[in-house]
Length: 313
Image (cartoon, rainbow, N blue to C red):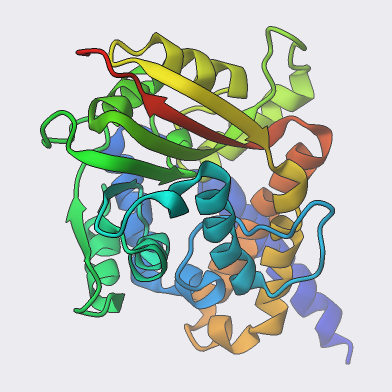
């Protein structure tokens, strides 16, 4: 079929042009909301990734696992690593950057938390509400993570997974998370963290890759694991019992698996029409760059647990 190579070539050219023209740089929380509104509206991300818009956990060393099951496993692994499973049923938990509510539903259903999930995306919140059974103690609200109106000490636990790269003011974010915790309350956080340039300066190609990753997915900035610790420790609300771990190896397979999932579920993409196919193809270079950054240690999957101090704050 002589037309087939031509068709592939045209598709690759269109994908490359779409990639170059389709930057989504961070401008403000509104730009983050607009990006997630669009991703939720077209349905492609949910059809491929399911309820969880975050990486999966494959073990260390990694083992083969279903793509979607690995995402639910990440939630359970974080709960047990942080000790959240020891909190009594009915404990109040805030999920900051809740997406369409996948983690919030697990936390409410399997661990008995009274969950409030927040996102800047109104479409994500609408979808989270639609997917959540009425009997779960799980509510959702549109909210900016830097302007949360709740009173101090409102929650027994705060959970946030992969939300921090979308937030420009890292110190203010750390302050807000700790402000809302009860003294002794538990913060559990997962973040995409860049290598600390104070210990190993970034080479020019590495900085270029980071810039592309920031622009393509609307991220404000990547913080190093060391910087996240410093922000938490500098908070006026007090931070104690801070522990960290690097789960990069356990989460790395999520990147190649995200591409393979498109081949495993082709109808999930094709049924949405040509624009969804093009949209899916244009995400491939960013996913490949993420995998490259993970392998080089340029980006890491940092997990953090800490408690609010007993001081007045």
